[in-house]
Each structure stands twice: as structure tokens, then as C-alpha cells.
Length: 217
Ligand code: URA
Image (tube, rainbow, N blue to C red):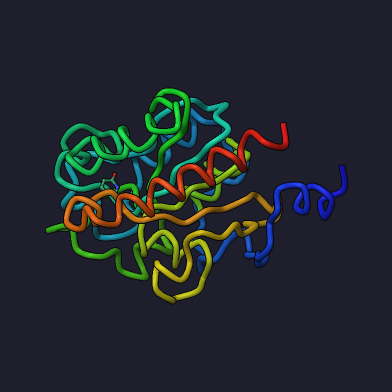
């Protein structure tokens, strides 16, 4: 199927082409790595100052053949302790959100923009994002997911390179990167813990995710 026909079949009504690498030239030689070599490279990374304060790197978790890739922002306290993304309270909510559309954590792949925890869970700094971008880009390339679900403002702004409100970005299907991978934006589970009224909208985003994933296959 031609890309345009595929996008039409998915009712993708809005999209923008993103450059595969938005980072400045950070050399990691990661472009040809397999999963294990990439994991090793990440675990030894000292490209930014976050390596000085991390307990360990948080690479990503899930099925390396997953249809759905979830992208969050950065590890928090529990993720830094356990070496796995989304394992704290927000992670438990994410797991429940996935369950609401019949998916388990093991079926999807979960990663963050940053592989190291920013101190006090502050927002990622541009320099840190630049350093980590080649790793996430390589994860996306290795996985080649059928759909990316970005959770939260930081991941949404990063992937879309567009800094408008999350509310204005959700409920649409974008196409990301060279592969024009369908991309959906929803609220971060940590935000939903603080603003449970928006859980309903997040559920609609998840239903859109499910329909988009499985309608065209
Ligand atoms: N928030 C994120 O964005 N990622 C995590 O792994 C945990 C909390």
C-alpha cells in the first residue's frame, strides 16, 4: 500500500514530517547497534552530567517486536532505583491505562526521552535531550513500531517540535519521522494522578490508539 493510501486508511488528518534526529551532532556511533549493544552503550554513557547523579540508566522495557511504543519523559526516583521505566505510581496508572484497551506492559515497548533521572525530577534540559536523542532514535528504528503514543507535554513537544498545549495536541493522529509512524499524544499519567477529571479524555486517546493500531491490519 502506498504511504498516502495507508495514512488515509488510518484517517490520519493531520501530520507533520519530523527529522529523524533533532539533536545536535552527538556522536554515539549508535546508528548500527542491535538491542543489546545499544543497551550496553546507554549503560556506559557519560555524555551529560546526569550520569553523575544516576543510580543506573533506564533503557526501556517490553516486547522488542511490539506494535505500540510508549514514550515518556525521563526516569523518576523509582525508575532510577529499579532501572525500568514507569514503575512508580505514574507507572502503575500507565499499566492500568494500557489494560483498559486490553494491552499488557509485556506486549508494548516503553521508553523515555532521557535514560537518566534528572535530579529532583526537574524537566529535562535541552543539552540532556540532545545527548539522549540518538539513543531514543535508535530504539524507534530498531522497534519500528506501528504506532507511537507520547505521554505528556515534554514527550509531545519533543516528538512534534511544537510547543502548544497538550489539550490542543491530543485527539489527533500525526505521522512521525522517516517511517511516517502514526503518533498519538495523551496526558502523562503523573498529570492524571493530579487531575483525575482528565482520565476520561486519556481513555478516549487510548481508544483512538487501539482503533488506529488494529483497524488497518
Ligand atoms: N515519568 C516518565 O516520564 N517516565 C518514567 O519512566 C517515569 C515517570
